[in-house]
Length: 465
Length: 36
Image (cartoon, rainbow over all chains, first blue to last red; front, side, top):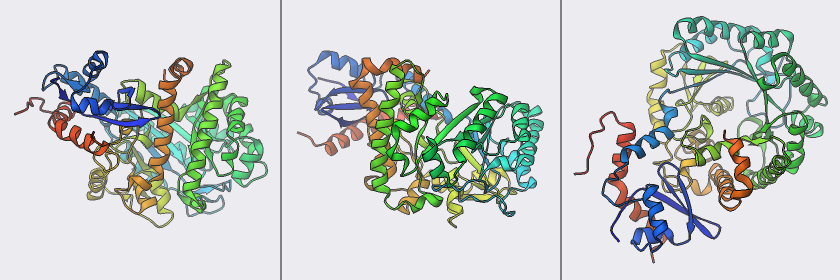
C-alpha cells in the first residue's frame, strides 16, 4: 500500500488507541492501528478513507488540500494574531479575608504600603493600549481590589479617554470576594459595565473555613445578591478553589452553586503559590483532586440530565479544543504559553510581570518572571532578552515529553509552573503534576466523548455553544 | 513489531518535511514553499 504519512500522535486509552492529527482531530481506533499505519498494512478500507480525509495520511507527497489544513492550523493559533488581550491590574495586596489557601500573599486591609500608585496605573493603561489586540480586557485583582475604588475609577476613565481615539473593544472585570461591594464600587460597575468575578468555595461551613472568617459565606452571598440586583444576574460569575478540605465535598460544592442560581462552575485546583505552598503533599493533593474532579463532573452531568443548566467550564474548554475548529482564550492551556502572549500583569509595586502566578512568586522574593519597571518603554519590556529566553520553552510542540504527547493539542505549556515546582523553566514531564493532572482530566473527557457519546454529546453541545 | 518509541520516531522522521511546510504555510508570510 503506497501512501505518505502526515504528522500525528497516538496513545492508548483504555482498550483502544487514540490518534490525533496536527489540528487536534481525534480518531478512536483499535490498539495496533498506529503500527498498521506506519507499516502500511491497513486492511480496513473505511479506516483508510477516514485517515486520508482527516490528514493522517496522504496519497500524494503533498496533500491536495494542504492549504486548507494549514488554514485550520492557523485558526487553532489565532489567539496569537492579536497578541496580549488580557491585562491584569493588581491594585493592592490589602484584603479583608484570611483565606487558608491565599496564593497572592494578601495582607491586612490596614497596611498602607501595598497599593498601586496613580502614576503606575497611568503607565499601565498606556502599556495596555500598546498591545495591538482589538479586544482588551482590563481585569482588576488583589488582594481585594474593591478596597481601592478611586484607583478602579481612575484606571477605567483613563482607558475610556484613550479609547476615544483607539476604538478598541474594552471589557472590564472586577475580581472580588464580594465582601465589600459598596454603593460606590457598584456605581462604577454600573456606569462602565464592569463584570463581577467572585469566589465562592461551596457551602457555608466549607467557605468560612477556607476564608478564615466566621461570617464570610453570609457576606459573600449577600454581596452576590446585591451585585445581581444592581448589575443583572448575567454580570456576576463565580469561581471556586479546591482546598484540601474541599476535596471531600464534590457534590455539596456543585449543589451550592446550583442553589445560588449559577449555571456554570469552574472546578479549579490549588496552585503552588503563596500560602498554598504550605500544602504538605502536592502529589497526594493532585491524585485527590483528579478524583474530586470526576465525582463533581458526574454530579454536574446528573444535574444536566434532570434538565438544569450547569456547565463545568474546564471541561467546556477541553471540549471546544476537541470538537470545534476554534482556539480558546484560556491562558492556562495554551501553546505558546499564555505568559506575555495572552496576558500581562501590572503589579501594585510598579513592575510588569509575565502572569498572575509570576507576581505571586515575587511575593516570595522570586523575581524570575518580573519583566521590568512600568516606567520603561513597552517595547523594551515585552521584547526584552528575558522574554525571548522564555520563548524557547513556551511551546509544547517543541519541549520533551510534550512534543510527542497525543494530548498536546488540548494542553499547554507553563514555564512558570515548571520553574516553581521543578526549579527549571523547561520542566520534566514524567514528574510534573501539571502534566499529571491535565492528562488525567483530558483523557477522562475524551473517554466521555468516545465511550458515552449518545449519553453525553447532547449536554456537551450545549456547553460549547 | 515496533514499540511506541520506534513508531513515534518513524512518524517524526517521515513527516518532518511536510510538517515544516504545513507550519510555514500556516504562519509564515511567504507561502511559496515546495519540497525539493
